[in-house]
Image (cartoon, rainbow, N blue to C red; front, side, top):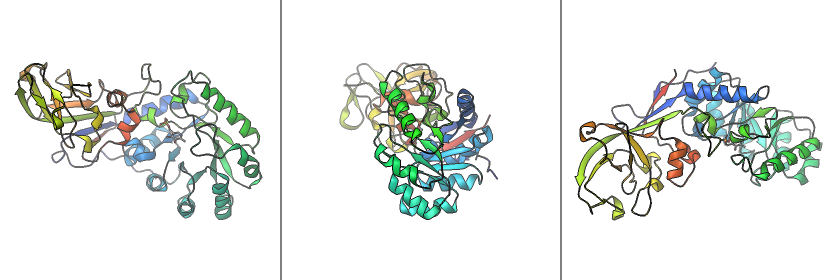
Length: 371
Ligand SMILES: *Cc1c(COP(=O)(O)O)cnc(C)c1O
């Protein structure tokens, strides 16, 4: 049966510097919200890349308890971890079928998402009527069988219980590619034996076309990412990241901060150094230089900017505008939380929240909150 989520993981509180708080109640609520949105279609959960960095061992039990019965991973190694937590749920492996994956898929009752005629032939030869999914390409040109392979696939005795495709630009509701892909998918589906249909990732759940099919595959939105960029985030935040201030100091106008002296104080400036850097997944491109602003943190209720480059283990904040009595060594700076989302940090680092999430480091003391 299902294992309970852990209450903490990673280095213990006293040994770690930064603390990552993961709200599993918010994760469960996000899943329930999406499940209600798409009903009567089934809502699965994508937990590839260690559940987008938050931890498979924490995310899967919380999602199962919320009612989720279908999981998607990218790799067999991830599927093994999900299977170890629950013997019953359906587990689909998105990255297709390498010959080495056949045996673990059979032994662990995993469903490979077959993405070409040759993968389908390999599966039928080795696994006979064992269930699988079939991925067809409607525009991404990454994985998925092409139109030319469909007649041969239709003739195979493949026990595919799910026909899926993946959107190229579902976060842009105005992009004509969305409608094109929905149409191409319908055309391909008509050429194949009857199967349940699955098209939608997180953002596609918010498209006006409502391309829910029979089963949807959200990932990012479950973890609190905004599936509707440019609009208010309909999801609850799941992560909070706090790092302690190690030192504070005052520098004079004209003095410079950090590697390669890329940030210059334009006034008498108070700095705080925090114990988190790019080795912890704080994007190096969140650096703040004289040429561009960078990341921000919340210190004692004030929003403060980064000063200089993000180092491996350290980052410097400009806390001049925080009352001096509110800050000392040990005060925590919040880098992700109610006021700074993963989407915000991604944008300030020239990347996307998905990358912020999946690069979360291994040095955090992780605390899992369940209510
Ligand atoms: C990662 C992935 C998803 C989930 O996408 P999100 O944008 O994170 O919701 C769904 N389907 C496929 C094929 C994927 O690779």
